[in-house]
Image 1 (cartoon, rainbow, N blue to C red):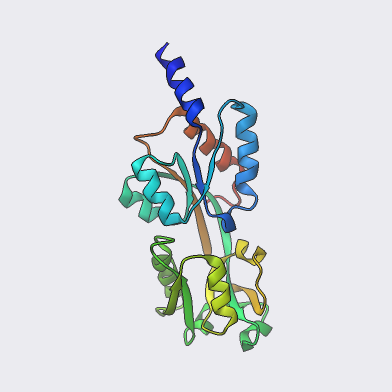
Image 2 (image 1 turned 45 degrees about the vertical axis):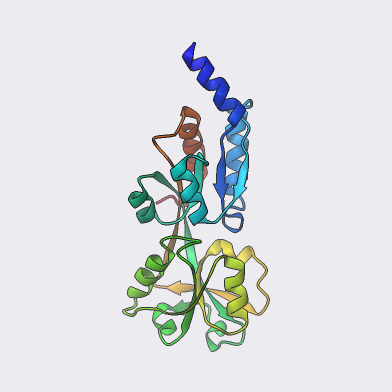
Length: 219
């Protein structure tokens, strides 16, 4: 009887999921469709939030699941996490850059350039990921500016403020005067789903199974 009452409360509340609109074009809708085929009575309200906002809401119980980036950040916050995808990383370059004529850009060739990054508030762990990625080529990136979202990153690149390392998915965003090129050596952009183990209910684990099964090149 207690299980039935618990399930009834959870159905009324729904499975609250946070996501970054620019980074889950296909994975999230497909996963929701599969999940609701099994749990049609459970609503799935969605919240378009930065990774930082998702982590905060997961910690205090205002979200049940979140699509976020860095696993190191989640470990420090006490959240559980599971890799769901790993995307190729591309460098976003101003169209007028001499490197834009290349089919592939070596990471080392970006050393003298300024980078446009994403703030720690919006995407915790991005700065560390960028630093570790450039360390493969033996240097520390010079970050000229940090912004909150991928779209302003592309605008900054287009105006010639710098270059940016972004997941392959970013190519789907409007990017006038910006070109994307794969980097060498290859760099992976990880994508993780996170949840609060202390506040989770069984359907959370079920959704994790669904989204993991649909992930691309899971780590």
